[in-house]
Picture (spheres, rainbow, N blue to C red):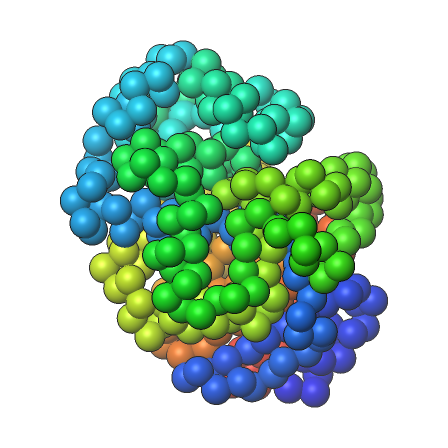
Length: 328
């Protein structure tokens, strides 16, 4: 694992990497108490909450979102199903454009109203079009409507508390601000994004699609728990492929989508030798976490380096490949 550590350090980012195999720590690099904003690596948490509600028959994944949230039907979205949202095939990627969604993401009522008014761009189910921000607000509001409990409270009671994930937060508590890791942005758009997500108001806000703050150790523990059978039926459904690898209309690269997770087997950022059953999620090519059931391997790599475009995915894939080589 020496070359893995060298790859991480050579990049010059503040970073934490935790690798587990069969629950045993193989590698643990970086400050153990640093709380990173993990961008879209947050998405599986809220997706699994919805899958768990389906396991308990509280929701039907093939029912329209509007069955549980009638106002969602605005803009012609009445037929959009929960499963289509989970698969990023809901027919719309943003509510007010990416910049508009970013401006409202810290204000839950405004974000919800914008989603209710948002029009469709594609026929529901027809094409994969990643929802960077509204994915979490749609599923989070669905959770609230069905359970009467906020998504952050339900996440804490259903997942974080039972799993002992004491360093994972959907909305960073103010007393923990000194432990947060500021994002450093590079390239076109990177510095602007960094200025937004480094604000206290953003880090404190409930943004289920992107706003979890955690440590590499805690995130690795989460994926280890999934490998060990926690929420087994919900995880099995969330991992189920939604189709072949195709070019996503929003991201512009080939992705194998499951139903809340991204899947391996297509190269970066999970590695050129990643198995097809590998499941996890990338976070703006800044942070990533995944689990490989066949190898019994967990990988959680969190950094402060945000680079515009897809070039940083090559680095994530290079580190993943180094780990995979060392474990094969």
